[in-house]
Length: 280
Image 1 (tube, rainbow, N blue to C red):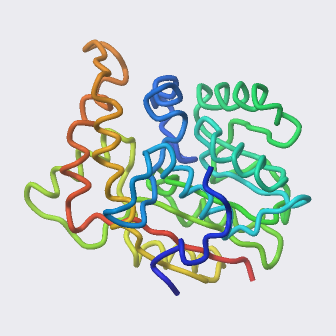
Image 2 (cartoon, helix red, strand yellow):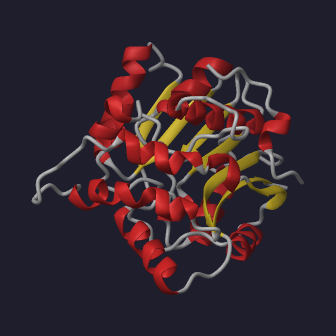
């Protein structure tokens, strides 16, 4: 197992399904982060990729692990506003189904698909990861980018995802990771972060491994790429710096908290998991 997914990178760079029901999708889908509401991947301090390029890089690393190719059917658990699904479908020819518990996200994702001319290759629908509207063994692969952190019963979600996978198919999970327990001010910062992002609790390594095992999934790769994604927190704080919602805006807490993201991201207890599991 490697802790650096880029070692396998071959593609060119160019609340229970993973997004809060009330997430500020329109703002995030706009100029601030261009639709990629997840971390970016940088090789190191000398890597001068923009946030937009780095988030696409993470998507490409996920696609590489999925073995995405024409004729393969893939599931995006917590699709957000659709950019990763559309990028993977366009680059690989795979067909993608995305789910979210946000009607707003689904509407934006469908608009993006129409604009990109990819409506025939991707579909987006409202669904809970714990009760997927797909038959058993429907997919050749699945991914969940920063979805597990929003799900209280991860075993139930992973079991349901595993049900929809054909034997031998991979599941790629990437997510913020709590490497070790936090106390004092660090614990309070983690609690505030979870509250702002609609997360019941951040995943922990042992908990994820246990949930995967109970779901009947075999772990193929389990890495912590926290140091490669750490620049994201400052980049997101900068991207949302000009957003100033009114006090009665339902997203006020989210936007207000983005200024604290660099402090959260600097905590040594905060990592980022990149794992690949497989249905036997």
